[in-house]
Structures are given as structure tokens and as C-alpha cells.
Length: 256
Image (cartoon, rainbow, N blue to C red; front, side, top):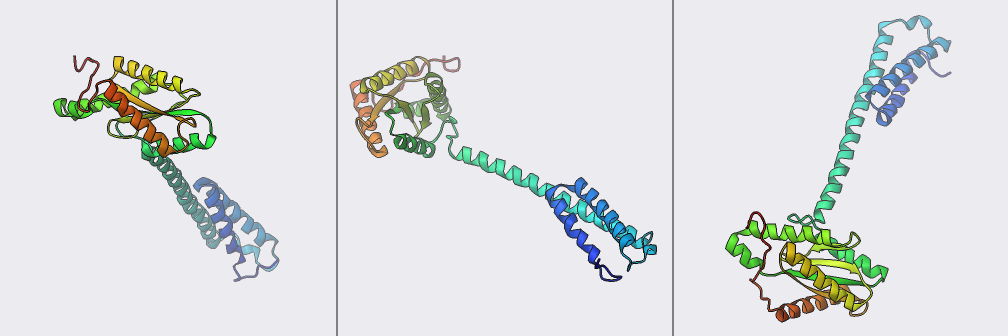
């Protein structure tokens, strides 16, 4: 309707080819380029102002090559960009997970555990915070080296995951400290749970002392829960005759 010799409205097909390349890919946009060339030829055939004799010329071949090349180039780089964006998203998610994990034990770290505590507090359901201290890690590091101490920490982490229900939140919150969140209704259940974990860990991993605090019976904030659990932890250490620098390790194939 509007095309005239020398006006060049048909170059607007390139916009469609670019959009096809961005949306599809190199192969699809190449077909779109070829299709646009055919549409251009049809437009010339139907347009009374443009001579049909101009169709089978080198210019038409160059136009077809241009349309297809633009589609291939744009489609290729659009596909590469999408692939890189997807890969970047995966890497960002992996980094986010790593940022919330303890490198040695692969347990959630303090940052992730604070989020878990906040979620428990927000739910307002009764639970117990257990804080455990590995007895005498410093001494084992000095006597046998940090590799041995790291193995002990890894064994404790693996045992905690195996011994506790999957609904529990387990984390390493310090050099020799672990923390657990467990749904619990009664204080006596919390004390029995702490004793059972201590006994089971002592038989297969290492000697660990636990303190605990109940929500909402004893405290209603994260700081108060940590404080009560920590005080109970070290009071129990004294009652059990434990001191920092003393550790009891279950013999393994590497230490026997």
C-alpha cells in the first residue's frame, strides 16, 4: 500500500527478525528471515508501484542473506545470553546455600540458625532450644592436630542428623558448639532429650554437654533462650565434672 521505489519500508522486516531472534534462537530466527524475504517478494509482486522485474536480482539475494544473517546473529547471542543468565541464577542459588552452611560439617551456620529460630518464634508453637558444647576440643587439637579435631566435629554433626528427627533444626553455631531446635511441650521432655542425645553421641562420636531452654515456658525471645540454655549448659558441665580441655572420643578405625 505504501511502498514506493527507493522508500525502503520493507526494511522494517528486520525488526520482526530481531524480535524473533530474541524470543527464539538462531535456527528459528533464520527461518523467520527466510519467511520475511518471501513476504517481501510477495509485497513486491502485489505492489503496483514496484516493478516485479526487480525480484530475481542480486539485490534480492543480498536482502535474503541480510535477513537470515541478522536472525542468526541475534538468535545466537540471545540464546547465549539466556544460557548465561540461567547459569548465573544457578550459581547465585548455590552461593546463597553456601553462605548459610558451615564449611566443615555442612550443617546450617549461625546465620541460617537465627532465621530458623525467628521462624519458630513467629509460629508461637512450643519448642526447646538445645545448645551443645563439645568437651575439650581445644585439647584434642593441641594433642593430635586440627585434622583430628575436625573429624570429631564431623562425626558429631553426622550423628546429630542421624539421631534427631528430620523436622528438627540442627546447626553449628561456633567452633565447638552445636544448636538444635525441637518441638517440645514439657520441660521434663527437654531434659530427657538432652540426656539421650548426650548418651548416644558419647557412644558413637564424642562427649558433648547440652543445655536447653523452653519456649514459651522459660523465655520468649531468641536472646533469652540462648542465655538460659548457655547457663544450663555450663552448670551441667560443672555437675558432670567437665572442664574445657577434656574430651572423651569414641575410638574409630583411624584412632584405635
